[in-house]
Image (cartoon, rainbow over the protein chains, first blue to last red):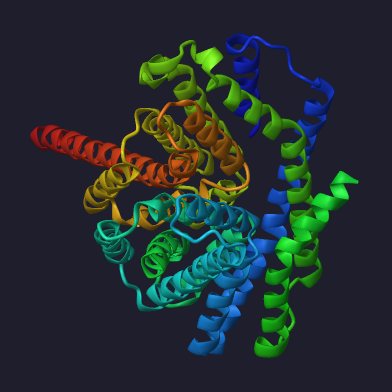
Length: 229
Length: 266
């Protein structure tokens, strides 16, 4: 059911617009079956495993009453899942090639390596801080829009100073940071915290962690570009 | 064999999270995890499911989608040469393809499903997961059509993003506040496992065909726009729903007043 739109779109374009038969139809059908089965298992696993453990951790940490441990946990959740994220590794490597190609970086493999590793660290740090900031927001009950719109204004201001070559990458890096396993855990953390703390509503306060995790990398990566170039 | 490789890859991705969770349970919280067997089973389901999902995508959809993206943006298909290739109206199939791919991949995106399920649970069913996913998918669809047009026409990405920020800001002031955090979140989750590889292929293909575009610089930016538009569409949906609700209440009040008058006279 979830895959119906993809199948319709792909078949329509293959048969009507490009007018070519499917290459290797058996392989494609098998792949489609894997995708459906995988998605079903994943959703089942979300409800059984990821959501409960995320909320259980949030509850336990909130009841323990140690702000420090809660923030350490939040930071590590953001940092550790991002630094190993395959999409980010790919993007960082690509970015180093671009910077070398456009002459921003000297043509030196070791330098490119340092640049892309620095980029990954920057993004991972920013996601860690984003979750920490989001958790503090939930604890304090600040309205989210002041922080996000404040962030937008900061991004707008920074774009005037930033080198053009880093902007596309910076804007995109916000989108690639949140992986499929991080999202359910982080969502459960937010909702779990806001339902444990008195006076917070899960809908109004529980969501929003991912929003920070997509905004802060933009700011950090532009900053990284400003420092390097 | 392929499955084992993908499975190992997924386990590698999950490892840091498992280490973190185990460390906190054992060293900091020092208490057993409630319903441990069930949680473990869920974790196994997630890893297995994600591996199957990725393998299926790699076998079926990605090669096909990438071939299509390249074919649709190839000079032969666009039908022109030289300066004609700069004419943005020639690429209409690309915009349609981008819009439809954006829509259909967002419907199947596991991260979007996760947030939508949670939103439905938290709002006690007021927000339907299907409705939210459809709204997000529509946002991504418009975003990708506009994003591919931007690559062809060569407009500045920064201008697009800044205008998007302005729209979100204005909407935030007007929209019902309870939907704002969820709307902001739906921006970050749309571009994940399914969408990114296909969209990247489309961006790179396009920017290497259109004269004067540099894949290195113009290939970026589709993801950024795809992250912004779901915020706008979800906020817009909330505004429409809110407006309808207010109109309905107004009408009901009016009706009530009228019946009151009626009973008063009788």
